[in-house]
Length: 238
Image 1 (spheres, helix red, strand yellow):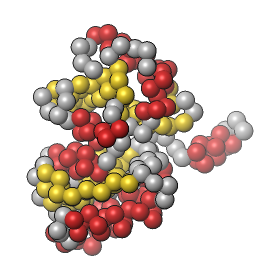
Image 2: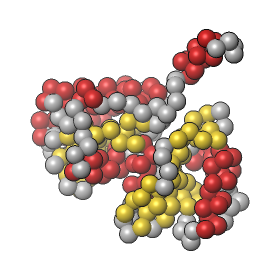
Image 3: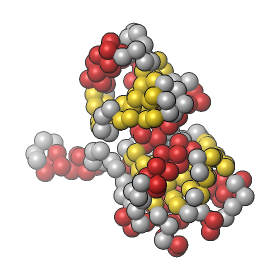
Image 4: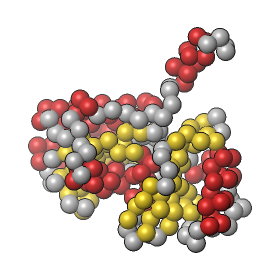
């Protein structure tokens, strides 16, 4: 099965083509252009590098959130647009789960973090043992201090390294830098990327969890800022 995967949930943007656990081609950029400018040209170049066309693709994978509201909307819209003409099955992958696949060959605990602002991060924690990834908590928006306390307890009871992964690493790491057993990810494995999204999506396709393009939905975890402010006004808080 050939999977075309997209990732634009934060600053970086990437695309990949995967077949049976093998990455045939991938592209990654972390520049200051908008995803609406970079994503589709990147898809075209990645398909060409994989020596295939969109007609050769059997499924579309996308990191469906959490993350940037704008980035997620662009990614979901692109995935729907690519999948709809042939009614290709789609797999929406948790952005945080895809981060764990960056370290799928390392026995460790992965703590995925994305900057959610207001002293919060989007977070999930995963155990990796013998190539098997086990989720330890659901995706959530959590205060940095609260997550630091959780990881302190975890590091005291586990012999595994805890590796902080994701675009929120620099924001969150100062809260845990003095705790033994907790480390920042290296640069090459730090950011969410379409290759990891594709590998995570393979399990969803095999387990029958793919959806039709019209059923593909974003996962925000919390309302966009404009909607949160409107809600506060209606409640008389502002």
